[in-house]
Image (cartoon, rainbow, N blue to C red; front, top):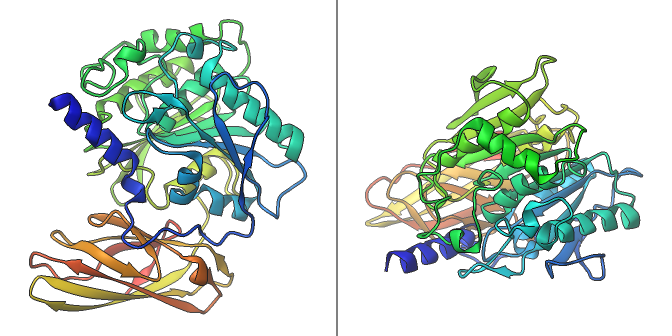
Length: 426
């Protein structure tokens, strides 16, 4: 029964960001998601989708964005902010779809012997074929290739950085595990996995040696690594964040003491590990109170900034993508309420595609909504534009709202951000 419950939890986690209370609509980007067939060697039998922004340089960067177990490339396109950021910064996004059945949905192969060796086969070879196709077909820059993903995709992110350090320049892993954490396919499912069972503990050198074994002939630079994990994640235990830190700091020959710590957003505690030149090679975010639900609003922008794809450079936080004012009006009764929200763009440039994140008071849970899609329904919520209101001109406003149940606290949402940047509220 415990194993069945964990499988259900895994399935629920992979669908968490898709649990919208109104039908999901593709964000109104200028370009569209395109499926590619015949992209090259494909031992993993994977599907490939690619998002190519209309405005891009001659040699755009390439970001591989990978879904969680039970998800898909098109699903992760819908649920994450990477396509909107691609429109803003002009990079390509590849969305692979895993086809390996791990017993509770299709997941990326991070367990087989073939997948753990450079050129060994399985999903890693398929993903590199997708990257090569994007370079050949769209002029993708081979010196600017990056990986990111959530849950199974976060695991695969660290995996690709280990197996193909000659292809990827950096990665951002959300809720992942260290490379070579899974012994084999039998070790993968929750409930039977030593890796995700909460007791995994190796020395930094043991973790680092695993990476070095993946491609013994590699003598070039290693990809920089960004790690994200929620402190309340029990499906992929939060303790694995520390194991990943130990692995990658050892790979870079860095100590276990961070060179700096800060809180770039409320509840985000960041540790940075820089080399002697001051370059941040590893950084880790502990997201206070978050479960198996990352990335949430604004986090993709920090990943893209870490890659160096924004004007701020690789070691800075994203530049302000939104200047905003948000007003909320609550009408409450018995155990229900409605909240009307007005979002005003107080900046000087038009917003093309937006996400509004906010925190609901305890006991409030959204039951329906209008003019946006909402996920999840309680706690830290992200509202995403629908097709008819994706653009907010400078000085203009849009109205959205939702109905919610409550247990007594009828206060307005707090900690409001638009496209990851804080808004003034009223």
